[in-house]
Image (cartoon, rainbow, N blue to C red; front, side, top):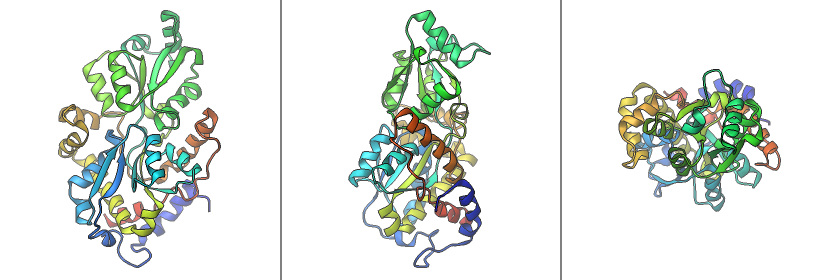
Amino acid sequence: MTITRRSILGAAPALAASTVLGSGRSLAQGSSAQGRAAPLRVGVIPILAAAPIYVAEKEGWLKQAGLSLGITTFESGPNMIQALASGTLDVYVAGVAPLGVARSKGIDVKVVAATSVEENVFVAGPKLARFAEKGVVPAEVFKRYREANGTPARVATQPLGSVPNTTLQYWLWEVAKVDPKDVTIVSMGIDATQQAVLAGAVEGGTLREPAVSIVTGRNPAIRLMALGGEMFPNQPGTVVAVTRALLDKEPDAVQAIVTGIVRAVDLIGREPDRVAPIIEGALGKGLVDTATIRRALASPATRFTADPRPIVEPTAAMQKFQVKIGALEREVPLDGLFEPRFYARAVAAQ
């Protein structure tokens, strides 16, 4: 069966009404997760969109379900795919786009929840931002920069196949209609992109929170030039995916994770001051203070959501564009990639 947004939404009421799976045990309570000996191996990109998994852990909800996490951080989704392929990860918390590449290579993963949408934005460094006057369209901004400096603007993003890279290219070529001779795309990791923008080594780049709040806070001449929804309409962002092996063997553990994500997204929306220290502890590592995290939570670049269903169609659109730019050899059917039943049960249990 081909999974479309319409078919998923149509199935949601029935899914939400069900509270058991397979053996009849309540998934919401995570009974098979109780007493799990080994920590779940979780791969995470250390950005604000990953906050729900940290909040769910620190609030003790996962521990109550018998789960502990062994978290490894990665610089990009494509890098994490290698870990999935080697069998060293159970849970993937990163952009949805690389999962198309994973499926094309026979790696069976399931998206069970989202965490955030429209999180990738474009920031312009001081040299580029001065051409971004009110009313000047992006294509003209880049053109004026090249004409004034004699070289194209250098913009940084993550590797080909990642959501940031795909989003940037879609915005440049499909939305803003920028002349390719006016821009040079430089591929680098998340931390390197942030540092390059701050140091003026590039003229702009795709960033996510809390990096947006960090760079604009340190240098007010750095400007937010395009929001995520402008760059790629309904831009799919970070998701929580699990291996097929984990889903088949430990569905209650998967349910506990998704339920924790749903609760965490709700808590972040209701009590940002309460969760800010948790997020700072997980992402700040002594380099980002809680006040910056609080600004990031209130940023227009921040849109938390746990529902994976609305991103099905945008994911298909993103995958189609990835084929166009050479990030994918061919479109991979999305049948079976999205598994919304765990989200539906988590919401029904709230």
